[in-house]
Length: 111
Length: 116
Image: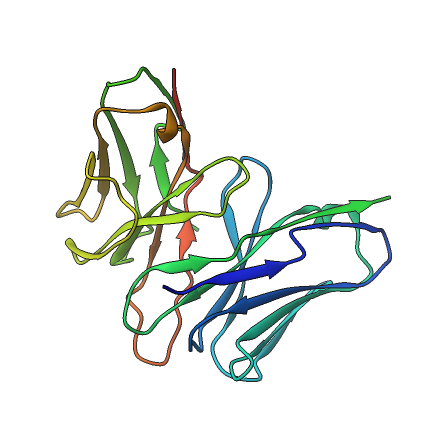
């Protein structure tokens, strides 16, 4: 069974600081997705990474994928309070239609 | 842009009752997925449909069943409800992945099911 792990699980950071969330997965896949979820709300698609070395940036968030290391990172630059949310990575396999979600990282940005 | 529509938004049931959740995918999306998310948990995949046929099956209990209709909407039927079924149930839709292309799943707002 594919396992997807994120760390840290909880992250509290001050506004203006930088930090990285890590997503490790246990089997070969070259498709990785990042989602954001506010409490009690839906999951919002942030990034789709489709190949080794893929890097995508949107505002203060940048995601990358290393398929050989089975690792994706979500880097936060100069955090602002509006980024407070839970961030999930998800992996899918070419053989199926389901997403395997990571454990989630609950981010709190403190003014 | 049209999004995934789920109904109802909230549902309260008692143990051993039945419930039906509905999902209307984004127009022209051909794949529908159902997920269950408990408090503080990551979404757990239940079942998916591609072109009205069951595609993949995850951790869906035998008490639950689902189907996709000719208009592509999907329903999740839940019977003999238990306290542990209390959760947020998401439906997502996407275009069927072509080889080498990843298609993000677009999620609805969810149905919050509470079992008393």
